[in-house]
Length: 167
Ligand code: GNR
Ligand code: NI
Picture (cartoon, rainbow, N blue to C red):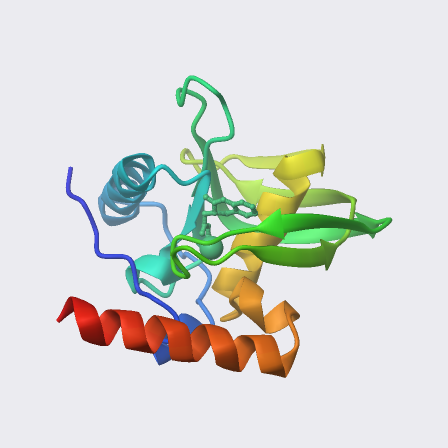
């Protein structure tokens, strides 16, 4: 297992559109294990491969209190979107920034599990929000891009300044 580096907004690599996974082989299983370790270490509830600079359609998630219910989504697609909800979102790639995003309230997602077995999940609440947030990452979109251009620029300036001070 290994901890992976999480790209930070406004890194342009976060705007890469991820490719579908072909075969779920040892390389993908290692990627999933490393992504899970990285997500748990960073105390996130989800992580998309895009965030660790791997541009393939892989997502890990764990919304449980005990941090022992890992969900893996390979080649996920949202097939149904219903209603509208808002939530104060954060992102491991945009540390310390939280803002309100509007998304579908209920979704149906189809994906492959770690064994390559297809599954369908109907989700609402935070799970539905998190799936949409992670799918956005695979499509090269960061949650701040749902905000106004003015807010995006303020966040960009803040994070650039911060990364400069860290160096
Ligand atoms: O840890 C995370 N928390 C979170 C809170 C509200 C909405 C979405 C998220 S996902 C985020 C982890 C992350 O950045 N995933 O891409
Ligand atoms: Ni995120």
